[in-house]
Structures are given as C-alpha cells and as structure tokens.
Image 1 (spheres, one colour):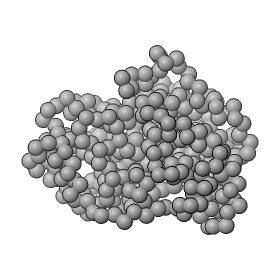
Image 2: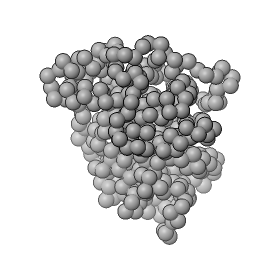
Image 3: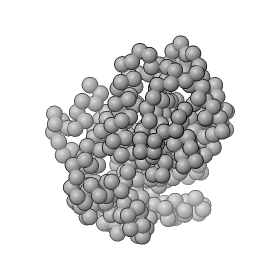
Image 4: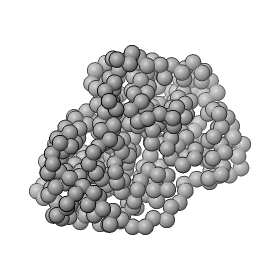
Length: 367
C-alpha cells in the first residue's frame, strides 16, 4: 500500500471485496471532526448499496504507523471554540455523529472494528455498533465524559446500560478505563487478538477470496484468541452501591466503604462534574428501557442542553473542556460545586426536548 497523505484524515478504499476505513489523524489520536464523520458516513452509504462490497473493516492510524490508536473521541477543542463562537457546525456535528452511530448499529453488512489502543467517546460510538469488535492487549476503552462536564453520548446510554448488572452505571459515572479482557467481560468487545497480528490480518482482507460478508467476519474471528474474562472491580460491592437510588447515596456508600476500591472510586466521583453525574445516572437508567433510535434522540436533546442551558463560557461542558484541554489547569469550576448541591429541576431540564417530534433533527432514525 502506498504512503498516504497526512492531510487525508479518513482513508476509504475497497480492498478485494472489503470496504476498508482508516482513521488517519494520528497526532490527534484520530479525534473525530465533522469532516471525518461525513467521510465515514458517505463511504458506508455507498458500500451498503454496492454488491461488490461484502463487509466493512475500520481501524485507526497510530503515530508509528497503522494500528496502535483507534479513536480518542470527538474533537473537544472544536466543541470549545464552536460553543464560544456560536458556530452552527456544533449542532451539525452531533446530529451527524449520532446518525452515523445509528447507521453502524443497523448496518446490513458485517462491520468489523479493530479497537487497538485508545477507544474513547466518539471512538466507542463508531465501534460499539460493529458486528465484530476486536480488542488487543493495548486496548483502552472508556466513556470519560463526566470529567469534561458532558455525558456518555454516541449511544453510550444504550450500550452501557446493557452491560451486566450495574456495571453500566459505574462506567458511565466514573469513566473507568477497561483493558481488552475487561472489555470482553463487560460485553463491550467480542474477541481479543495480539496486536502484532493486526497488520497481517488487515493485508489478508484484500487478498482472500470470500463468498460472503459472514465469511469475512469468520476469517477475522479465526485470528482471535481465547480470553480469560476478568472483572475490573469487586462485583458484589459494585452491584450493591451502584444500584442505589441517587448519586448522593452512591458517593456516601463509597465513602463509608472499607475497601481501597470503594475509597478510590469516591475520590474519582468527587472530581467529576456534580451536575453531570446526576444527569448521567438518570440517562443510563432511562436508556435501559429504550430502543437505540429513541435513546439517540434523547442524547441529542441532552447535548443541546449541555451547550445551551447555560450558553458560552457558563456551560458546564465548555468549562470542563477548558480545564482539561484548553488552559490545562485541571481545575474546573463546576456549577454546582458539590454533588449535594444539585437540585432535581437542574437534572430534569436535560430531558426536556427542545424540539417537537416532527422537527427533531434525528426524527428519521429507525423509520
């Protein structure tokens, strides 16, 4: 394969009978821009209706070459700039990203995600709907949005709420990072393979004669290894604490706990946006009883509120991004400042849709 130009952030090509997508923005850990979302969507729509293409495979480009990083999420610096400038592309970004997430979850052909390296936020959005999700010993999966005053979007409420027991609440609130075997145990990956085998497998996709999309997926599955599932936290304690009725009760129970895990988890939660912790717990619990299209519509309502309930620099999300990625002082001024200070009406406001159903930007999903 010839050297690809660095300025092309998404490389799409048909190799043999497989549509291949490479996220090619390695210095930004393949963070998604609006242009990248549009490129991926256009390729998937074209290949969906192309009888020559049997399956789709997606990978990320690392700083050392192919693989090593999948996707660190959406371009949060763009979110910050766009929110402060009133740039309408911020609205387009989330509408089109969530529509892409839905397209992947409902794609009619096998879609195989090679989740090597960092897979967070928007990276989870373009991999969790895959028919085969392959992790490696280098994989790091997380939905860390409460740390920037956001919520696990891109369908995060949908797929986290379907993790075993109360693991979804734990992952959504804490942003805990999972390794490959932990991701398989959590139901957020299907199989693991050694990262060293990825380049050879990718090359073979274009050279192997396949009779069907299912054969492509079987071929990839044949290269994976058995994984000894392992949990990332004490099961009984996690189940008991994260089943409690509200964030205040969860944190008090953790602070009263005697295990190191309990105390560390309490400290972790105290650093996150108090308002968004409450919003996220409500999101995950609502999402458990929702279909994907309705859950994505709910998230689209929520993300509009993240930037518009308190516009500009007053937005909890804008402040969270400022502290992490812009000024990098890691000292967000959360409002409210404490978990105990969040009022129920502040939480419920996130679940009021700004649009009537006939005008919702994602009204066509699932129809």
